Amino acid sequence: FERNIASPGDLKDLQDADLLIGADGANSVVRRALEAEFAPEFEWLTNRFAWYGTAQLFDCLSLTFRTNEHGSFVAHHYRHSQTMSTFVVECDEATWRRAGLDCMSDEESRVYSQLVFAPDLDGKPLVSNKSIWRQFVLLASRRWFVGNTVLIGDALRTVHFSIGSGTRLAFEDAIALDRAFGEAGDDVPRALAAFERERRPVVEKIIAAANLSSYWYERLPEKMTLEPWQLAYDYMTRSGRMTDERLRELSPKFMARVDAERERVRSVGT
Image (cartoon, rainbow, N blue to C red; front, side, top):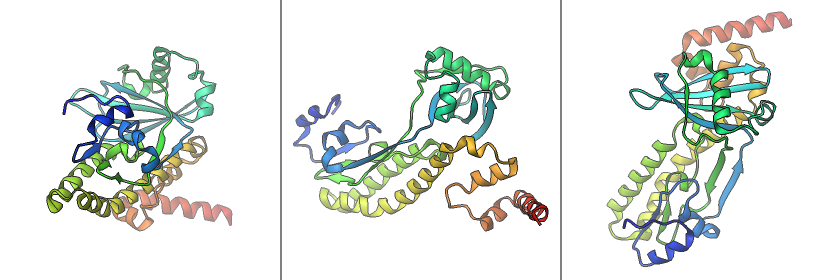
């Protein structure tokens, strides 16, 4: 316990452990130590994003779309405390390069992003915390456990931030693993097999929806050419899990507008 594991070689000292849980994030040392066995698959998305904070408060996870002479931007924002919100700025690669963000310092990028979203920040600054521009990696490990070593959370698979479920899934993994040991006792192989059997179907459905959501953002410039009602509808149905029938139950006024616009388009076409 209380031992820093900084590289795959450090795990040699833990070979006699009864159980080793890799909950060390997308760059998991535990996974890399057994990479051939876990067989992770990686897909790098092309969009760029930077993670900021702001004192401007947002009630819930929401989006703001903005355009300028360089291209299209979207901000994912949500309150994470009584005084601060998370503010993730995302854009396609072409916009990122046209804006010169690939050549800017962290401070210059912060100021530029703050200007793009100035109408939404109400005079409050973006706060940087090593807010470098990154590409999101879709990671999925073919195997969930190898011997007495098991992965959970982002070490096992990543979930695109557009559905906001990464932390929740990691906690649910831990709860499911604890439940499996509650049933299997000290039988580690049995517990890990039960954990994967019960948890994998649930996770894979969420991952499929999250990946479809991430691909929607990869086509952001194309989406920004849509009419507002088309953009909203396209966004809400991006993961394939939201049907028109369900939307009519949840947002009847919105779907009435969609139906009216569709009818208008059809009448113009004829």
